Amino acid sequence: MPKTAQKDASTATVKKQGAALKHIQKYWQWYAMMFIPIVYYIVFRYIPMFGNIIAFRRYRAGSSIFGDEWSGLKYFNQFVKDQNFWRAFKNTLLLNFKYLIISFPLTLIFALLLNEVKNVHFKKIVQTISYLPHFISMVIVAGMVREILSTSGPINNLIVKLGGEAITFISLPEWFTTIFVTTGVWQGLGWGTILYLAAMSGINPELYEAAELDGANRFQQCLHVTIPAILPTISTLLVLNIGSLCGSAAFEKVFLLYPPTTYETADIIGTYVYRMGLGSGNYSYATAVGLFQGVINLVLLTVANKVSSWLTGSGLW
Image 1: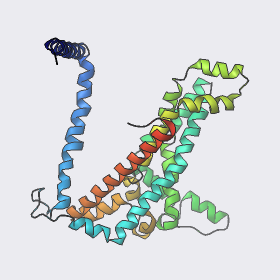
Image 2 (image 1 turned 60 degrees about the horizontal axis):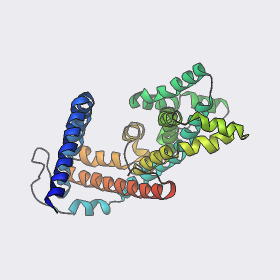
Image 3 (image 1 turned 180 degrees about the horizontal axis):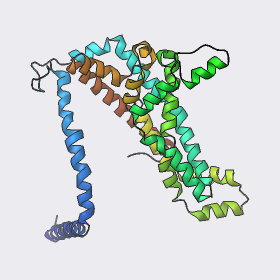
Image 4 (image 1 turned 180 degrees about the vertical axis):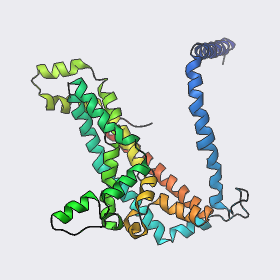
């Protein structure tokens, strides 16, 4: 490269660095605010990842995380042969999948309906009522569910008055999926509409005016204007939901609601890891299961993102 070209390139680099430094000095408050979540993720998300090394070592409580001896894939081989693990794996996928196929379209439909409400006061009241369940502690939600579905609760009282027999909903494995999905939809329906409504607020009103001039009714405007405009948001949220199909985000609810009699359909990877790790003190085994779960989630997220990018042209990366 000629000396002149090298000098020009060096000068351009210095100018870019100077511009970046000036930008940081001008908007230092924003960069300071970004510093807090960055530190949080480093300290509480990334540094603890080093603890996954005990999945490959024989770890005992009170000893170093590097364990007493190298065990290789011993604990991975153990849980692969454990039928209880595969039961928990299957339940995790089924519960999350059933919740996804019901809650995802309902949330989108609810957001579209809210967007069509023109009475501002009524819209705010509906939004407030639908948002409130999200802020209720899961402990309180579990207590409410147990009380409502108890043999002396209002549901069973109604069944008895209609001539039926009381049902022990909480203790029956065949009812757990219904309870799980129903409570999840009730608690998350309103909160899940926030991103959709935010995306809808950015749609150009002229598109609706043009559609109305072409004779499109409200439903047709929603179908041909609103949904295509928020399609990137829909695909992004769907990818994130698919990526968490094997996750244990609902650990608290399952842990608070399930008795041993419902393990057949209610035991998920999160509760299985809890029992094997904190319950039995087998920390290396539990870590191996958790590491496997993380890998599966990563694979699901990557595949879902690739499919979304191929079908809609929109993805996470």
